[in-house]
Image 1 (cartoon, helix red, strand yellow):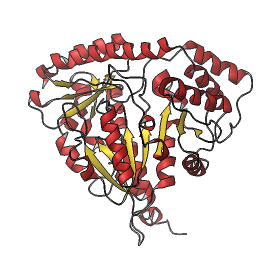
Image 2 (cartoon, rainbow, N blue to C red; image 1 turned 135 degrees about the vertical axis):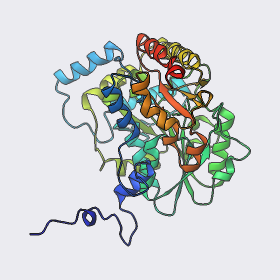
Image 3 (cartoon, rainbow, N blue to C red; image 1 turned 60 degrees about the vertical axis):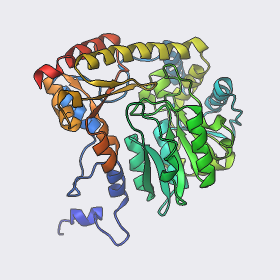
Length: 414
């Protein structure tokens, strides 16, 4: 029997257009000009950091665990036998806790039986929402730079990915021109707030304008609010709380960032019952259910005292300041974030115009890994952000102090 043609098996070219894997890879900027499939920049920087014993400030995950009481709750659930499938909608204890959280912090009243589903992290909830609501002929609007999984899932759905730029130094949308990014084909507006990778927090007036435009163009708003409790000064405003928003908004968040359990992959989605049901129809055939022993533990976490939630933001802000000081000492221009795990810095003052090339050298040059912002953009946005690097500060303070010391020497070794 002859060997199969690997190209034909992957259907790299067909009458119906690129196959799903190729659309997904292209959306995440993983296809080279020759069509070859590459690895993510996160994997690349992680490998380089390991090779050179560098401090990896590329990927956004903490290097210390969250509250012991939540960990112990998960252990107890495992010991008690909570190790089989949870209901596809999620355990009632977590859905009730999410509803209570939304009421407590934002005054949103939700029915946990019809308006909330649990997902495998926010990433799955976003994927399920986009796959449920969009397809060929539609447009999905995001801000740019955008989290890379957005482009991947939009590509998989077959919809077109359109963007509205966020420009330094404040990375806020230009309200005078925002409507230019909408069209009659805009089906979903995907709003990440607080915003990764820029660290911007959008004020209520900006979010209200998005709601107005979504209503004008009959678009659904999908929000990614995983950094909702990690803001440094500005108050997080969920889009669903604004006038005219609730009936067209799906709100997504997760436990990973708030509680420093990114590996547990417990997220949730809420909104109008009919829209939630549509997303659930897709989500049920992605993972079906997720992390049974972790769901009750996260429900416990969502009910923790206010001091916990204000404390995690205060601690993270101090870490932001430690790293930012090191970046400034290196001669970089620092764009101080209002939220998230990340700070962006411009390397142009050092005479460097290609931050992607620098990112690949930094683990060896100074022993620190970072991510170029250009990888979170389409071609025009990549040119606009060509000299920017994103650094994660969700690490132990002593690690950040060492990283800051190393980065401060960058100008000397270039």
